[in-house]
Length: 126
Image 1 (cartoon, rainbow, N blue to C red):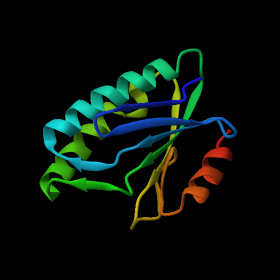
Image 2: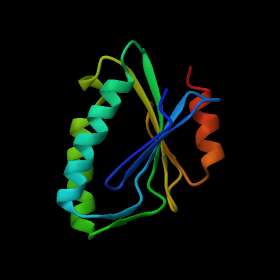
Image 3: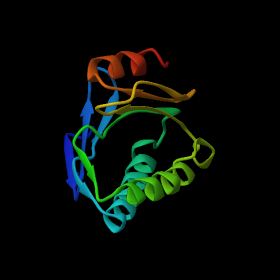
């Protein structure tokens, strides 16, 4: 499938052994950059989901630097609308990798500090 695609702050790779896509979201994120990245990610997900019932994704925020708290909060609110599971014809299971938060947020989303734990959770999803 895909090897590795890099656009802006986004590096997309594929863990073939687990059928998991990794979106590495490293670098400094401004509001404009974040909006642009969301367009890229949404288009990639729709393309990757062709003929699939579900996608498993690790969204790695462990090396993300937000311009400020307001930027983070505004982009998060927009992302929740764009990536709402009801907007897609497939299921997205998302493991969010970060440095501070651990635990479930929704049935199809969970926050992790450790990548191996994220992979394990995603593997169990289907």
